[in-house]
Length: 390
Image (cartoon, rainbow, N blue to C red):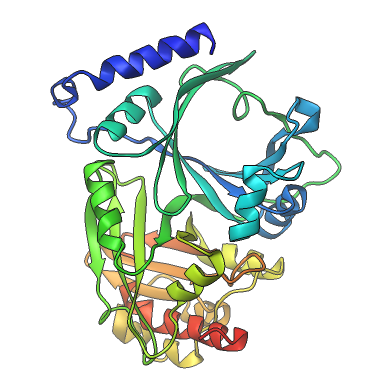
């Protein structure tokens, strides 16, 4: 262990022994989070996955880690679009933890990295409140400065990694080099930031993880949906939405509810072989142009019947967008007391019927499209029926 890492560990141990609430009485949110730093997916072929996210979703090359940078067991490609950074990681040799994770779960989210001002404090306080530690605070450095990282465990095998980068000026993180492809370029399509990320947990586990985010992370429950609100003729689920103090991080947590057939959450848990991230919602300021570009690049979306749009104005009131354009692209609309939102969901983006993306544009609304639940889940059921998993 380096001298500076020892110093970080001593700082962490001393913080644990203090009365932390007194130290941070001034802050209503005990652990402010600046935003989502990045999302790391373990994938079978990082190079091909990076190409897919660039050509289909308009991400740009940012950074690379692999044999050329001294990494002997893993390779990672980092792609970026506005404030969204995806890290796509694959093993280079057999028998690694990454390879075993992919063998069990398929491609999926391993790390939700949160950008904080003090990664040592974030680790100390969450562990003090009951989190299971995954990585004690450590410093990584290169010629561009230093980054402090720490991590705790959450549902399934998902990690929250705390990233403190105030003393770093590099492209991404130490250990990575700038990744450029001057002979191949793609255009961004208007994706802005991570709006929310949804976790699927086993039946009876939703309230456990709600309590975790409340007590360990200092989040608050902002919405709740029961199996009467999220149901169809055949399936149902329950969901509670957790948010941090400034609202930049939102984690809906789903669990299955009893139904006549296997719900989308049960299908996920079966094929992912455990709990994990079901979908990533990414925001745009112009959903019509973004979705049109995605469709032109081959991204497939769930579809609802044309009848969904017959009484749309009566249900949501006047909106700025042309309803015929929304109908052509299959974009859904819902309204709450603050405004309205537009949303659409991709089909799964890997071999297993697990993770997918949501494209969302908020025009004042703070909710999650409750009025679209029935149409959405019926569309999901049609996909499940085609797969023979309903």
